[in-house]
Amino acid sequence: MSYFLRYVGSRLIATSLIGLLSAPLVFAQKATSSTNGQSDRQQPLVGPVKPLMVERIGVDPNQIMRLSLHDAILMALQNNNTIQIERTNILGNEEGLRAARGAYDISISASIQAETPKTPSNSTRFVGVDLNGDGAIDELDNISDGRPLPVDLDGDGIADNTVLDSDRRKTAAFNFTAQQQLPYWGAAWRFQIDTNRFNTDTSTFSFGGFSIGGVGFAVLPQYQTSVTTEFQLPLWKNFRIDQSRRQIKIASKALDLSDSQFRQRVIDIITQVQQAYWDLVFAIRAVEIQQEALKLAETNLNNNRKQVEAGTLAPIELAQSQAQVEQSQQSLTAAIGAVTVRENILKGLILGNPTAAEWRANIAPTESIDHLPAPVDFESALKLAQANRPELEQLRLRREQNAIDIKYYANQSKPQIDLFARYRMSGLAGEARPSTISGLVPQPGGGFFTDNVTTQVPNQYQGGAFTSLKNAFTNDFYTYSFGLRFNFPLRNRTALGLLGQAKAQGRALEFQEQQLLQNISIEVRNALQQVETSRRSIEAARAARINRQIQLEGEQKKFEAGLSTTFFVLQFQNFLSEARLQELQALVNYNKAIADLQRVMSTTLTTHNVEISPRLDR
Image (cartoon, rainbow, N blue to C red; front, side, top):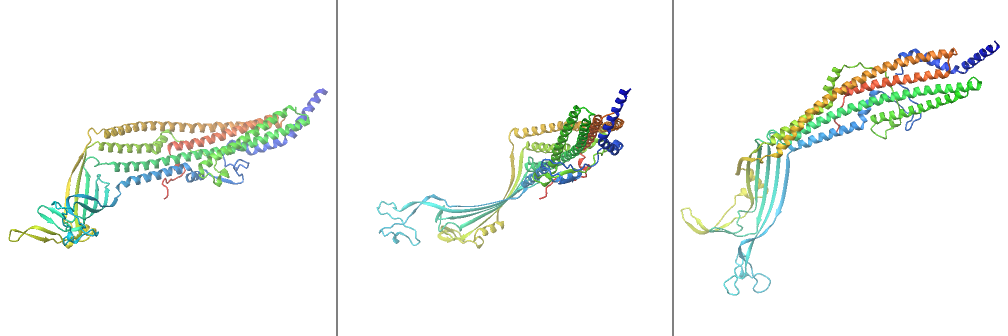
């Protein structure tokens, strides 16, 4: 009987000591239960997170940057380097289109050159001689006009001072050309002005029975000008489409294609921002939960240490409590590191400058995670995807480019027949040089007699290059011509081969469209399935969290009645922490699945009220 009383007394004392030593833990757990017990079953940790005030690499905890999801998306649109690269690609295609349209620019060219050739002439002339050796040509050896006379010093009947004559002409030429290929029917025009200046040292020319004295020209130096206007029009090949029109159409489609690619890239970036944002929310919440678990583990260790000192607990129990503290500390360190990694991923998406001050900011997301949009049925989601996906638009534009190539190469396989028309006006001017003609001169009454006649030059033709140009535009002297040009290579394998290649590419694009439609259908199915799976995971995780809360409350009551220990209470607290993490992860996965579904349906921009301008300001 006395043994029984001593046993019962020792158990009551031990129970009382455990209750006293564990009072702080019980109060903390009760406070947790009172604040989170029933409300946790209805409202899990879904509200905005608090800033994480711990030291991390490259982050100033006091530089808090509160960030909503919409603000993060706007920062990405403004700063993300990938988006800026796509914008510059659009700018490059804009310049490519402008370059293609440059084929219709008016081209202006000009040239000027001078030439002075000295060539042998098929005639002879006499040169002056110096009979007395005074170094000067003797007057007796020249006639009155300064031309030398033949001299025969050895009396053999052959002039000693005969030399082969030469022609020395001085020419200068100026050319001005303006031409343009027209944007219609492959036509082209050309306007050209040619002006030539001619001068010569030759003094006498013979034409039949007449001898032309002086310089032999009416004007010298003379300026000859021709003004030519030409028009060319293809009648078959290059009529409906030519290389220039093909390049412009393809460049225009390429610009539309880059716009669509920019839109696709923006959707991808926004989706990545959403996923990174929710991952950061989860990482910060995970740190909070691990911090709570560490505090409970440390409380358990302190209580067990006091029980060992009181002799109510075996010292071996301290090792298990210490191991639990170390494990909780390790989990907390890993959770803090995960926050830094997730935060850097988000910063990499919303910051463009690697030296921006925001890299040291402590991001505190302000969004509540418990936001569950209404699900979309498969048929509606598939219709939205088929109507909005940029990939389908891009494939359509590539098919239109292919149709342009087919039309062009089919046209190139035809014969080339070009109609041309040309009109040329000529003009003349120069310095008047009257010429004397010796020979038979016709008389008014009939017959001829030998005499010298001096010709005169009208004032209209006296002047320089501008006078010659003015005379050309009087249209007194003109030439017009027109005709057809024909060119057709036999077999024409180049054009036919390129046409066949373009048609084969068109068939490949048709199969690519079928494959893309099939892939989009698969992506829609998978995205909707992921949304549904995540939704059910939320329900299961929430039920598990509520049950763990009930178990913890029951274990606390058993502890208060002396029927349990702190070890089991902390164990169920850890179970509850894990359940809360699993519920939070399920919520994050659901929001990420919703973001991916928006990407698949290509409704990301409208969902977030984002309007994009792919063109850069100049």
